[in-house]
Structure formats: structure tokens, C-alpha cells
Length: 634
Image 1 (cartoon, rainbow, N blue to C red):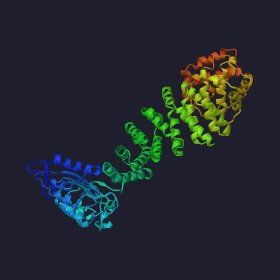
Image 2 (image 1 turned 90 degrees about the vertical axis):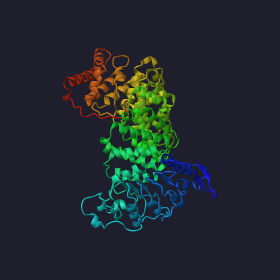
Image 3 (image 1 turned 120 degrees about the vertical axis):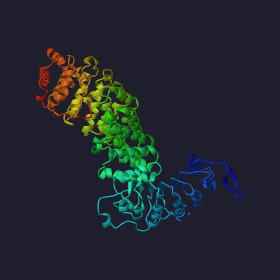
Image 4 (image 1 turned 45 degrees about the horizontal axis):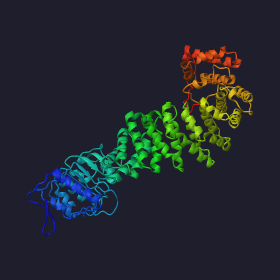
């Protein structure tokens, strides 16, 4: 359709006419190629092809970067442009720019904003702004963000303070806009002093004066102006953190859109993820729907997946902590666990991220179905936690990561034999002994480790691996522990109760004697205060109930009965219904019938039954305001 003229200029054949649908696409695609394709050679006279509206029509054009020259704008000045974007066009001079713009009388959308303070040949003055408003009478949208006004064009403060805020042009605090026939639909004043005045004749204004202007800026600049969008999101972050965000739904949707649009832009990922943390915290929670919170979770997981940067990872992990775990994360359960385990893989991860990620892992395997725990175990959860423990042992450091890792292992092995097996296969018992030796005074650590071993001891097929002189001596010695109230002693006794339940035939050791260990167990149980408040949470009594109707180990029976009496006494509204539901009362009847049951055990069994009967008769009579939802279960 084109030919080279005698002066080597590109010309359109005289019999060709191209409508705006084609011309707009041609110009915008040409600009994209010049900007992104290093092998594309710009054509000096390209814009001359569009100099005559009788053969080519342009309506919406985006010109960008230093490739755009004065001659290019001069070439298209006769076009009936409705929309013109001039982005980073630093080679346009202030003067063939103003003159050419003023020729485009049909223009409805004009964006001559700037993003940075770099040298810029176009200067914004009061005179220029007046001329734009007077000549371009069809304007509905104007963006002059980033410009420093070279002369004052605002009314004195005492004048603008009079009367209520108005968008009427005649009351405008900015003099040139008095010339407007009607308020603009959109006015970009971001990064200018003009956004701070009182009366602005536009329905939607971008700026940094208030939340509304900031949100308008994020909305307007996200797609094509990431630098401005990043700065606006940063201001939203401050609003949510220090003040209060009143347009929460809109704010969240805009930040989500920005994060999706700029997956690999570090500045937007950092500020966006930080803003999400504050916009999803407790203060704003009641204003968020399930659907919106799920959208936040998905964009956070995208960030963790696609942008391996320490600040983004930390912000994303912290944001997940604002959700009810595991309930709100269950729809992405497998994915979130895989991402967290991947974060914990590196030998030397950032300490704060490691701590948050282990905390999340722990919360995710607490109070979920066993099939979830099995699936997470197969992902390498047990091995990852033991690796973290090994590193902390090497550093001789017992911190939150160490404690959370043992706590997470306690939770993931709860009634999940496969994960218990994995724990043993991955040198778990060696690490248990090493931790006990290295940190003899860390009570929380001891409780978590013993809770976990209680889970292992509940699996009949694994108990022989615990039946060694070394392990039995350790458990026996821990019966005397006063760490964490009764918790360590209680859990050690629980482990031994399950081992004793297998009978004397499996006890092949000479030392320590089975009878000696049983005597120590009796002593320990009798030393406990049955009204102790517990740092434990049972979802099922099944592992305890199986120890009741038997005569091979009366001490195991006594431990189980004591455990039930303690729980139904201190937390009746939670544990009386659970015991009744799981058929515990009939098993306690059998304890009373067995001759081998000790009188103390029978007495305690009666008390448990009485407590449950009282609860059945009048649940309100028993104090049930004491429940505390703890993470672990022994």
C-alpha cells in the first residue's frame, strides 16, 4: 500500500483509504514494536502516512518514549483524535507540543502526565493549562500528574475555604479550570501540589490528599503506569496501617488487580503484599466476604510461587496468618503446604520467614482430617521439620522454630500411623534424645516432643521400636518432670501406658524392670493435681479408651481413667459429650466389673460417670466457660 517518494519518504498510495479501526491498530502496534523489539528498525517517516485525514483516520493513539519527535506530532495534528496518550515522550519540545495539542479540538481524553523528575522539555504553566481548557472544549479526561507548576495558579486559601466543597468549574480552586464548561469526568493530579486544594472540578481525581484520590490513582495507573501505581499502593499501605481504610472492598480489589497485572514487578509485589497484610487484619475482617478472602489467598499464593524475593515471601506468609487456619486455607490446602515446605527447603532461610512458615505449617496440620495429614506427610513434611530441628541442634539454638517444628510433628502424627512411621525412619528418635540432652531445661520443647512420642506409642506396630533400655529409661526419668505443670510427666506416662498395654511378654529387657517402671508410673499419677488446666486438645478419646477394659496393665488403665476424669471435670461441656458419644461410659462400667482394677481406679471411674450423668441431666449446671482451644493434642 506504500511507496518510497523521491525524497525517500514513505507515502501511501493515492487510491488507499484506511479507517480508524485499522490506523489506530497500526500506530499502536508500531509503537509497541519500536519499544520492545530490538531488531525492529524504526521508519523515520512512518507518521507522515497519517498526515491526511482524507486517506487515513486516527482516533485513539498511544505514543511513548524518546522515539516520538516533534515532526511526528506535527504529522498527525489534522487528525480528529479523541484520545491521545504521550508517555515518556521526552524529546517533544514544549512549544510544535502545545501548538499541536491545541489543534486537536475533538480530543476527549488527554494524558500528558509524567512519572519521574528527570529532565523534561515540556513545561507546565498556568498559560498552557488555560489554553488547553479553552481550546479543547470536548475534554472529559485530563491527566497532568507529575508536573511542577512553574507559576501559581490556585486561589488564595482563605477564598477556597469559603462554602462547601464543590466540583463546579466556577468555584474551582485552580484558576485555569474556571474556563471549563462542565466538570471533568477524570482529572489526574497525582504527584502535584494541585491535588491538595479544596474545590476540584472533576468527578474522579487522582492524587495523594486522601484515600479516595489514592484509590483513584491505583485504579487509573495500574495497567500502564506501574511506577505511579506502586507509589499510590504505598500510600494506601500507610492509610491501612496508620489511619483507617474506609473503602475496604475497593482497596482490596485494586491491590489484587495490581498484583495480578505485575507478577514480576518487585516494587508492586513488595508494597502490594504489604498492603494486603494490613487490609486483611482483624480490624477489617468483618467487612470481607468468603469469596473476597479466597481471592486474597489465591493472589498471595501466586506471589509466593512466582516471586522468590525475601520481603514478598515474608509479607505473603504474614498475610496468611490473618486467616483462620486451617479452615480458610482448606480450599488450597495442598498448594499452600507445598509452597511453605519449599520456602523451608534452603539450608539458610531468612530467620523471620522460617519462623512464620513453621508456625503456618503447624497451624495447617492442627485440627484437620487424617487424609490431609497423610497427604502432607507424603509431601515431605516430616522430613522438612526434622531437617529444621537438625539445623537448630547444630547451631545449639532452641528458639521458636525448634519448638514449632516439634509441635508441628506432634500435630501431623496425631492418629496418623504413616507419619509416625516416617518420623522413626528419619532418625526422629535420635533427634529427640539429642534435643533432650542439649536443652534439659526447655519445658515447652519437652512437652511437644513427649506429645509426639505419645502419638507414636499409640501405633501398636511401632511400639517395639520404643522398647529399648535407653528409651524406656528416658521416659521413666521424665515421669519426675515438673515441666509445664503436669504436661511432660503426663505425656511420658502416656507413652509408657501404651507400651505396658502390650504385656510382660514383649518386655525383653533386664534393665529397667517392668515392675520398677510401673511403680514410678503409679507414683507420678498420684502426684498430679486432677484439677490441672490442660495445654492439650483431644479430638477423640479412642486411644485412651482402648486402655480401659483390660487387666494386663492396671497402671495403664489408671492413667487412662485419670486422664478422662481430669478432662471431664475441668472442661465438661467439651469432653462430657465426646466421652458419651464414643461409648466411654460402658467401658468405664467394665472397669468397675474387673477384679484387677485398683480401688483408686474404680473410684475415679465412678466420678467420671457421675460427672457425665450430671452433665446429661443439666448441662447448664456445670461450669462450661473454661474451654481454651489449644493447638496440640497428645
